[in-house]
Image 1 (spheres, rainbow, N blue to C red):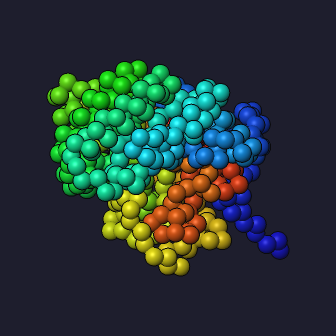
Image 2 (cartoon, rainbow, N blue to C red; image 1 turned 180 degrees about the vertical axis):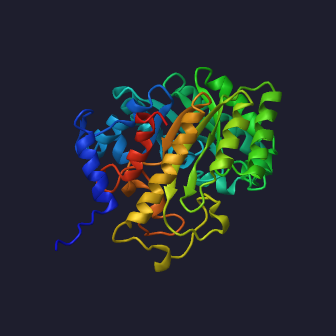
Image 3 (cartoon, rainbow, N blue to C red; image 1 turned 90 degrees about the vertical axis):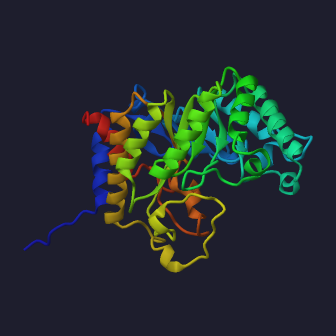
Length: 378
């Protein structure tokens, strides 16, 4: 009597991939794969975050994947203030200029990130006590950078993460010195400096009702002041154990009702245990000590977890496609699992599997869960 043959979920997806790609082939350094940007070209732009190595095209395999899969890019760090404005009277545009040149070369748009954020500030900001100096920094920083790249980048995350979880204003250096109206002031300055650039507000957890209400109040305040705001970015750092699908859909509808674009700007889905209550934080300043129990998949992802990740991504994109008339962009926070910031946040040294491509840049079951939505017409 012959023994039954068992095929793992991952192997099964590999077999289906080989059969499926015979009629629809594009090529990268990793063999035949479908192209996200081609699949969703009539729905919304598909983006990724780029690090310095990728901008400089030092890794041919990842560079081929990025060019094949994405049509818009966001810098992970190089346009944040500590890098682009390291000293009060000195700016360093070296890497930012390379990003713009990279995008132009490969026919991609750039979402520049970010002008005003309480984190990753230059060292001189940490000791600044004078209100006039903070206001001068905000104005000159935005004007200098946004005007330089007006017409060269598609959009700016003008203000990033200005809200607490309850929807109140975060007590950042900008809020403490300039008051709650610093956000309106930032958008007003950006509007003048970059009249040909889209202007967005970006934050995490703004699909949660309390924080969403705070974001809506903030956007209405900007609009009531007669200042331009073109869209809102929902970051999308979620865990597969608790993706808030209904809240996400509600948020799309409520933000779109304000007459602005809706985007998902930093999408990744962690598969690892979360040390936070309800899994609802993405505060980069939160750090948790390493614990082996928090890092269970060092030798690979079990098929059951791989399937859950695929299901979650499929359900998310089902919502995105349902509301494609309201959504202008979906950006993943990294190209492959090896790049994900979740490998080192909030616990350093973990092995996460949060994106659509694995550490060898091969498409995962989650990738096919997403593209098959288009092939089956939902």
